[in-house]
Length: 469
Image (tube, rainbow, N blue to C red; front, side, top):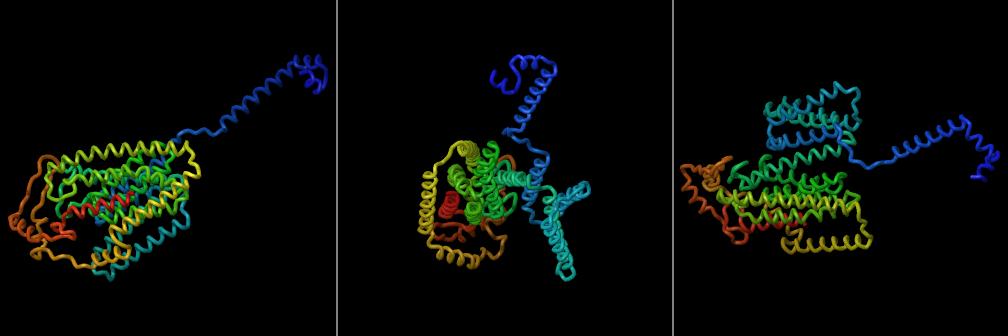
């Protein structure tokens, strides 16, 4: 203290006398207060990692995506004109309120050009009523365009760069809700649905078309995989990791080969466009075994995959499958949480990454060779598919759709209680005609038209497992 004080000027006695003056004491106190305020300000300025609360705008955007997707999908996929009217009303009225109440509308040139082109197209559709064969159908199509315009306008008014992720989360929630309901109609036939022999036992409700439901669920699988790999919240990653088990099971019961092809190509495109593709691929590989195990359990439930099964067997196997699906979904969610925690804390060395890439390349080559050995070369696969597409349909027995056995005799299952059998007056003759119309499949297995045989069931399983693995 001595040398430093002397350097400031004055002797030690002078320095002590200076401190004893009231003005010096006041200056010192003010300096300490200023130092404390500066330290407090610096602490407040430091970034603190806290869970960010969901705002009202984000919550509203998520609810909008959930409502629109679930409502349109539940209304037979929005295919019929009666759903276009309420969809246009559901979207145009909120959009009109936002346009009137908002002081400033954030719409760029690209958004305005898109909306303008939709209006021009709608005007052209209305104008075509002058030369159209059916003016009523033309007005329905104009209503269809109006529904697209309303949904596009409301989406552009609500969604911003900061709320785009919540919109996608709402869409995922809507897809998952509809797909879970479709899955429940198969595993709980006494509570939610009825057996339909006309559609060949292919899951289609509530969209109404099995290929449409399959593609719809595949979109949910890809979105769930994206959230499982990139969500900021650990809980969100766990929930997203649990969804693919149910979604993939729904795709399996649609028996749609196009859905599995779409899943494989969608995942491939995601890998090509994602700059962190190996992290996305690792997430998919970690979660895929649970979905593959769920597909295997679905394929081992013959009462749920074969036409003509008894109601009691379908109910028993459906409840067992529902229980196992819930267990697998929980295990997949916990796996996703563990993987998210490990990816944030662990650092993978470069040698392990190179080994991982080599192993993936070897697995891809092996899978391609195995697929060619089972189904032939790509040229033969394409040729066979083209010939099957060009082949004329087989004529129905009796030349009338009413004489088809699957229509004249249907097993109807009510919401509760035992099934009731409704048989037409020609049920016996239909059964005889069914026996005569039996044909032999590709592998010599005797089968009826519109049913799933053991060989075709194995093909569905192969497509499903190949798409997941």
